[in-house]
Amino acid sequence: MTRGSIDLKRILNQLKLMIPIFIGTAIYAFGLQCFVIPYQLMEGGLTGIGVLLNYAAGWPLSVTTLLLNIPLFLLGWKALGKYQMFYTILGTVSLSLFLALLESLIKKGLLEKITMPGDVMLVALYAGVTLGTGLGIVFRFGGTTGGIDIIARILQRWRGYSMGQVILAFDAIIIGVSLLYISLEKVLYTLVVVFVASKLIDFIQDGAYSAKAFQVITDHGQDIALQITKELERGVTLMPAKGAFSGQQKEVVYCVVGRAETRRLKTIVRNIDPKAFIVINEVHDVLGEGFKEE
Image 1 (spheres, rainbow, N blue to C red):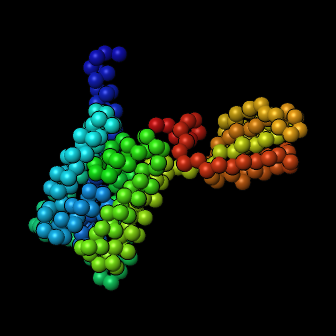
Image 2: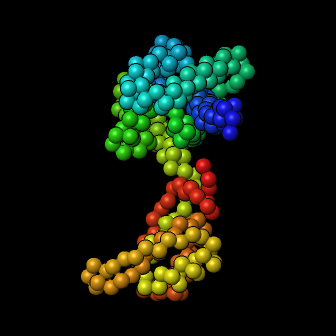
């Protein structure tokens, strides 16, 4: 493989990460400019502070979002490293650019703010979906939009907390402070936005594909494995096991199947060994043959 082909492959791999980050920040910016700000809802994190400054002083969100994040870039550079911070800075700068673009389009009348008189709950749901989808895409491909996102990624790495949970906690504090500036009704609608967004972030982070992992403790492991392979065409792993109380030797059949195949696998096991002990776990992301490659 030549040096030129290696460099081209590296560039293509970088683009595979950068393009989704651009798409995610564009969706997030759209949610802020077309749902959150027109209805004077709130957002969490440093973006929420930027939204408050927009309400109080008319400062453009595109500028305040970038300026407020600069101190956290230094923290993230030390804690997350240069590689991670490259995508963080990329996400933050692209968010500011998309916010500025949307601000310009709205001022020129080329983009109308979405209005739904009397149905703020529907606006809150749409806001939560757009914000959560945008951030979820950014996070899934290794970027952040700065602010609390940096802190959330640090805590995810050091403490194992999900990013959605961390963001929800910080947002609740910041939105509580916003009661000094906006009405209680708007804050309550904002909590709907934050809740929906946090769930979508975790959903997109874990993977849109959902499967089931089966662990079957049985005396007929080989027969069950062969039948699963024949009927479902799924890979099966057999592991030796021993009952702690009885001391009897058994086998554990491990298999991951799609959600639609769950009932068929249960039927296979019950037909061969009605006394088998079955444990079923939710699987949010599966890589490998028969599922998806990444």
